[in-house]
Length: 501
Image 1 (cartoon, rainbow, N blue to C red):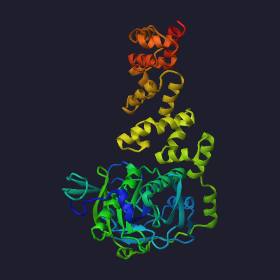
Image 2 (image 1 turned 90 degrees about the vertical axis):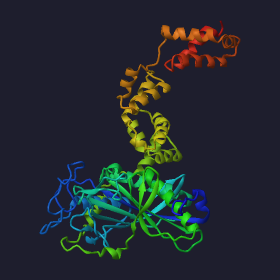
Image 3 (image 1 turned 120 degrees about the vertical axis):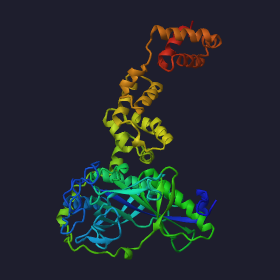
Image 4 (image 1 turned 90 degrees about the horizontal axis):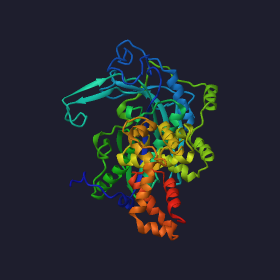
């Protein structure tokens, strides 16, 4: 195995090296029009149909800043405890982007809208403070489609196509300062940060934050330094990681890969890297540029932005309840401990449980199903809990069928199989599959009698006073009825026949 292929065991990495992370999160804002023109931002339109001279960079076109995007950026900064600039300006970032037709990106450089914030995240009962360096506003790039290769990347492709519909959509970049001190929890802290940030963005209503559509993308910077070293190691930047689970996997893989190189005396190369969802690995991209390579200079076609202090104060006063405060309130309403709430947070289930409760389920039942059967299914399929093909309303309906006695937990799991398979809502699946609990019918009477006749020794023990032995007979009936009988009803029927007879 070559040096670059070898990986060090994760626990072994931590005996010699200290990880440091940094996260750059890109958020497409949910504005109706693009950042500097009036073109639509609707997702899924035919390629290159949402463009104009301005976002295509044609000569003579002039940009006009999107006021709604500026407001959304300030609200994000306020939610993260940032200082809001009284004077900010846009710059040109000069770099060859094949998917930005004008040849440079309009962004904010040395005078961003928001600076010096923080976000606290909790992992396994310990709080980690992530310092926010800056929150700045820019425009997104277009989308490249590499055709003919097996990986979807440019290497091996026959040709490339470009869709400029996304070029110019307002994009907020949230950049952390380096995050040291997380140790073994570094991958989980990275995931927890992006998870909490996503929750804040949802609460603010500034973006759909659908990672599968590219609304939220994360660049993950990772470095290692020998324990006790006074200097941080050379970082790599894993680009465009597009799921919460993959953020954690990217940090974990880079820690193991870099440790293998450092163990062999090989210097870490400062570079961008691609993340591969199928293997959880990274591969080299390009050498990483410094700010000087981009030749930033102030955008001459845009006036500086000077947010009015009273306006900013009104935005602060109008912020919605943020996720941390909401979790505290829900903990009280649901009667659960901070540890139990942390379980929900780690599973990405807070909103799912909340919506299930709002749909009529009890908090206890909602937590039971989302953290139990549904969490296991998500884990088995390697998906996020919220990506399962079942809605909180359907889970609440399933719980309602159990409470009504229509089905039991065992039958409910079979009904859930049907819902996840796309067979319809729980009630429809129960009816179609014939999953309803069997009442005290002739069929059930026959199953009870058969259990007694088929297990005479057990029946005699029950008749002799060993009532606890009746469980074996209940199990026999449940097996015969394929779980459709109600266990309590079966137990009562058996007791009527055996106890005292």
